[in-house]
Amino acid sequence: MKKVSLFLFAAFILAGSLSGLAQDAKGAWSVGADVVSSYIWRGSKAGAFSIQPTVKYTSGIFSVGGWGSGDLTTGAPEETDLFAALAFKSGFSLGVTDYHYNTSKLFASKVHAFEANVGYAVGKFSIAGNYIVNTASGTLGDDKYFEAGYQFSTVKLFVGAGDGWYTNDGTFQACNIGITTTKTIKISESFSIPVTGSIIVNPNKEQIFYVIGISL
Image (cartoon, rainbow, N blue to C red; front, side, top):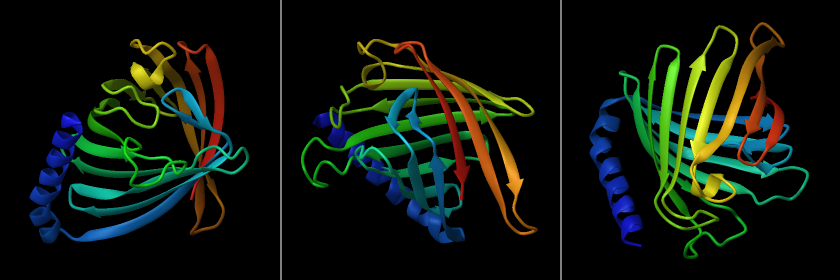
């Protein structure tokens, strides 16, 4: 509980310190949605055929918003997440995420999993680290996940490893290895649809997934 309180305090301090930056920068709202054949999150299946909307406000280097996933076929729990992030021109980024599933009441105890995120991208290489600070919604607390990726001309390779929430026995192991590529389909002169395909392998759970999605 102490870790959660400190985490929330740091998040509020971060948001408050950014208010001045937001006032000086021109902000804008954006909305979008992905439709995916399967919802695969960090190497584990979290849903089948799903729609995943995003609403985000961006002002300068600061962004805040919500992301969700609704399974359209199996009735899996609907996910509703909130996030805030800073993205610096240097390629460094940091943020916080609140994971929540609508099978639990919004203000009930131990139903929100809070995560700290940090990342760095330079050229075609990217690396990210994520740390869940509390026990909630299936997390064990102290759950860690790290991922590195490299963007080639037409495909991106990625390798992820984690513990706790991400592996069968909670130990730190590779759990998300794959390749993804995107092709833009031109519908008209003013409208195109990006189509993404991925092959994902989870060595820990001995599973493989083939996923296709479109972005709106």
